[in-house]
Length: 157
Length: 278
Image (cartoon, each protein chain N blue to C red):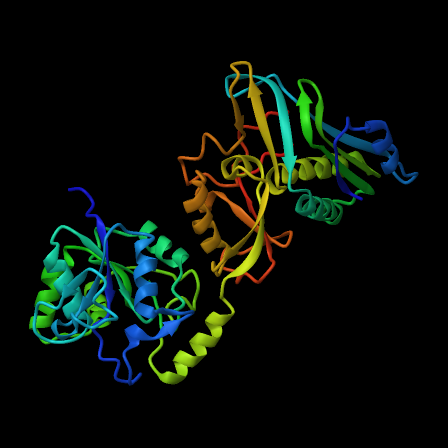
């Protein structure tokens, strides 16, 4: 399965092994981590929620697109759901390939598409005691905002 | 100058010549066309009136609603629209023919949202010929004098009026929304088509902000919403969702869907608020 969810810490060693291939000269991975601040607010933890049935299908389509667009060997993406503390890994993407250039490109493509196509939401909990759904609360009064916006990301870009 | 408020006007003064019986009284799903149109408009504007001729004021199909009686000589929709514009000079009118059985909440919502108060009218383009549809349109107060002049010069067709004087024109979200019913044959076809839109059960799952605002993660409900767009309008009225439809995507049976798709019994619908994975 080229895209999946997990409730538990992402096993990056196991995931990396799934990509190993004697024809590959290397592998590139991306990890998204829970950061301690977003838009000037101190974040204490995050909750991730997903419409998994659709997200798994669409995530599989993203990885398949990456394999079509870039000449890489294997690709995999794993996303956490549930409550995450600061520093925990929210998402992992790995790509193995004969040459490094396309592995970087495919990895970048997958994380960018995952961020704006998959039905996954995160709720930030702040030091102030407040909380909010990222991309939903502050934009509620501004109908011109759309899914194409990629700001407010709390994990590293 | 502030933007004029909008009242609703349901045109029910027609002669129904081709139908050979009163169109306003035709029933769909146990309700007269007039009642359906009146209730539809009432979901979107605060005051709604029925436009009729002086000799129809005691007619039982019409008498139960607030009325605007034709005030000038002549016949036809131009007279009804002029009478409403004269009765409330500071008000714009959401004018609806009563014989549009497929007209949806989504189409009215879109018309209101995209209104141009600086035009004489905001109207949809016909799905058949691209010309303005004057009888599902917003008529602004400024149209009153121009319409009076038009009628004085012998004009009687509201469509020709909008072609000549210009209206803010919109594309129809659903090409069938303004199909009207003029003959007994069209009526029986429309009754059959609407049977498939009879109330049915759909399952809705809520996520994230919408789950919190609905106070539940799923429900099965009986609805006569024809499309996901209509369903969202209905549920927003119930739960006060703060996100507008433009901010959302929608999925039906676990695949992304158009807002104008026809819902079927037991469909599973998910409204997708702005996403934030990664």
